[in-house]
Structures are given as structure tokens and as C-alpha cells.
Length: 536
Image 1 (cartoon, one colour):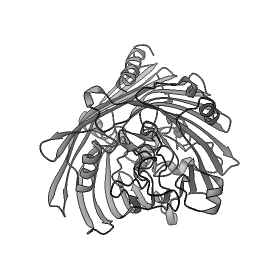
Image 2 (image 1 turned 30 degrees about the vertical axis):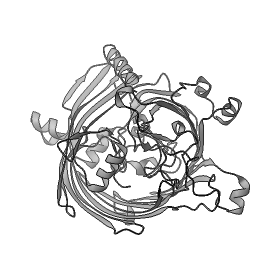
Image 3 (image 1 turned 180 degrees about the vertical axis):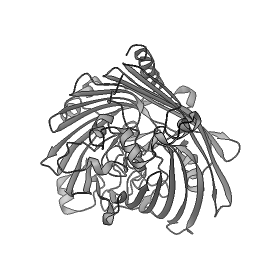
Image 4 (image 1 turned 45 degrees about the vertical axis):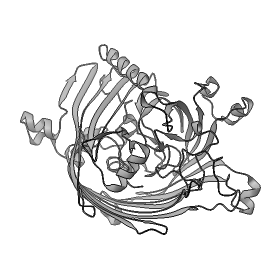
């Protein structure tokens, strides 16, 4: 994992000595709240925007913003940079900490922070997060860009997150942990990539980061809720088509494997082709293959850049895990988009037709809506989404090919054997933003060492309760209601530094047990570069 990351940074450093003005092949940092500011511009009928591939390329977004640049939308939604001329206020409010520009290059650097305090009112515990780091990015000539970020953190968490960390040995999406001062943890993570666009058809990125496929808050195909990983991403755009080849290297944190020995690697390769159909539809076809293990390295059969892995895997008598999927987006009218996903792991047609609950029928469904400028109120956005995944989906007979990385699912953070409704109301007025959310989640968990199909890192050959009659939420029934509100203030729209405060109320009911509840109050200052998923 780390060698690929350092190679990417090495090449970006070499390139910085040579040649960028207005290069736009870099990514815009992906956060759901940040993208909501301009998503309405991406979903206009007739726009050839492949919104199912995230993070967005800067050049795809800038061409649809008023004024054609991120600075123009910052002036529209945030602060006018001419209002303050003192150096400190410029750097704090609307400039990068370090800026170096010339005729053929541009380099920017900022400190990144996440300083916050909170309290679990029910447990009576004080909580904190203390993260520091640096973000450096640059454009080199008209074809190269680079970005690198490093975070070092110490934090304590509410009980439900703390339980997840103790069981899985990772902070959700942010890395392996070491104990730190009692109930706290020490952890770190780094991201980085170089981007190269040789012409208008190809966009190539090589680095260490996360990717996301879909238009929703969740993805059943590939999400960004796990730890960063090395990747090579090639986007090919021709007319209404965009084709993505994504080659990754991921880790199995198997029990009993010592950290100093290293964790067994596996590889997840993905094909995704997206196309516009008419003015209102966009359809994407997805396939992935997961392979590797202790005695198996990179298989060049699966470096095939053309879609359809099944014939190769069959001819090779492979034990690789193959998933298929569909991502669909429809714009019925201005300011509204309907979206959905269908994910297929395995199935038998006769068993699906007879609805006999065969364990091997493994599928997932997603449906959602985004409504912008609700009731004519500018920048008021409503999103409602429903997700459903059958038991044993993403598991495989060999645990090295399961669809997970660093003990976290690559798709939905719950894994499988669940259904969920998640809903958001977001509003922005200049520097201020407010977000309210409600989640209703029902899942079945393992009981008495019985594999009921939720945990992705299990083998589906181990301890299944039966062959037929398998229903979603089988096992120990868990029901979660989670309500939250977050107030945000953007201090600097260029560095993405902001203040936030909020409250989360969570009630978790487990079958035949007393329910548990959490009331988490928090406030802090954060550089908002990536999503944090604590709703599971």
C-alpha cells in the first residue's frame, strides 16, 4: 500500500520542478455537504455530466458553474475576497496559506485541522478530536496536477463508534488505531495522487485515496467509507460515453496476523461505463472482480481493460469474486433528480422466480430522490434514499476475496442483511449552512456463531443456518433510529476550513435486550476534505 503512495508523491515532486496554469484534471474534494452547493448545476437536463463517478473532475464542474470557475461560485455563495486586505484576514478567510504561481505552474498549501469537543450526555463522557496535517496541491502545465494530504489524529468517540473501533481495530474510514490515554485512540492516514490528461479523451490518476460510484449518499457498488487504498484510475470520455478502469490494491486484516508481518493483499479491479440517453437519463454498468490471498499475487488476466470479467474468470477456473451492477439517474424536471442502483452478486433464476429464499440469491437495491430549491427557496435541498441488501451479499467462499478493505465493507458500511431509509434536509445561506438528517436502519446480526450474512469478512460457507428460507434481517434483529442536526459556517472556502456544531440522537434496539441510547453534542473547527460516516 505505502510504496505505491510514495511513488505517486515522488513523481509529483519531480513534475513540480518542470511545468500549470488553469489545469483542471484534478479532483474536487468529495463531501456530500460540499457537493450539495453546486449539484443542482450538474443535474440539468441535457448536461453531459457523469455524476455517478466521484470525486468529480474540476473541469467537469467548472464548465457548469456561473463564471466557469470555483472562485466565481465562492463569490456567489460565500465571501467577496475584496472585503479584507490585511494579510492575516486574507489567509484566514479566502486565500491559501501558501500560494506560488507562475506562467506554467501553480502550487498551493494549507494546514488541515480537525479540533473538536463533545459530550455523550447519556453516558456522561467528554469526547474530543485532535487532528493536524497538511494539504499540498498543484497544477503543472496544462496536463498535470497533484495533491497530497496527511492527517495525524488522537480522538475519543461515543460508545457506539467506540464499540465498532474495538471490534474492527480501525476508526471508520481513517485507519488502524493504537490506544492513547485510556479511552482515546491514536491513528493517521494519508492520501495523494498525480493526475495526467494527455488529451480531451483521457484522464489518468495514480495515487492513494478513495473512490465512489453512484449519485446517492450511500453506494451499493463502491463507497468512500473505508480507509484509502492505492489505485490507478483511467477515464476515457468519447461523446456521451465515459468509461472507467479502476485498479486497486487492498488489505485483509485477518485475525491472528501480526501488524509487523504485514496484512495479506488482495486486488479489486473495476470497470464502469456511463452514458447519457436522451436529455434526461444516464445509465452506468458496473462490474468488479476481487482476487488475491496469501499465495496469490497480481493476476494480469484481470488487468483486461475491456468490460466483462466473467469469461476470463471461467476460463481461468478462478476463485475470484465478481459483482455486477447498474447505476441509473433520471431528471424528470428542473431541480429534481431520481436515482438508483441494482447490485447483483449471485443468483439462480429458478430460485428467484419461486421466491424460496435460497441463501445464494444475493442482490442489493437503492432508490432515491434529490430535490433542489424546495418550495422555491434557493439552496434548500431535500434528499431521501432507501437501500436494501440481502444476506451474504459481498461475502465469498474464500475470505481473501470478500468485498472489504481494512475490516470495512467497500460498499455500504453495514455490509449486508439490512434495509435502510436515510433522509437529509440541507440549506445554505452565504457562509452558513444547516443540515438535518434522519436514519431508520434495520439489520440482522450473527447469533451464537451462526453466520446470518451481515458481516462481509465472513465466508458464506461457514455456519449458515439453512439453505432455503433466508430472509433479509434474519438473525438478531437490530433497529436504529438516528436523528441529527449540524450547523456549519465556512471560514475559508478555498482551504475548506469551517466551524461546525451539532447534536446526534441515536436509539439502538437489539432483539431481547434493553435498548441503548446516545445523545452526542459536539462542536469544532474542521478542514472539510472527506466524508465521515458515523451513521451505522
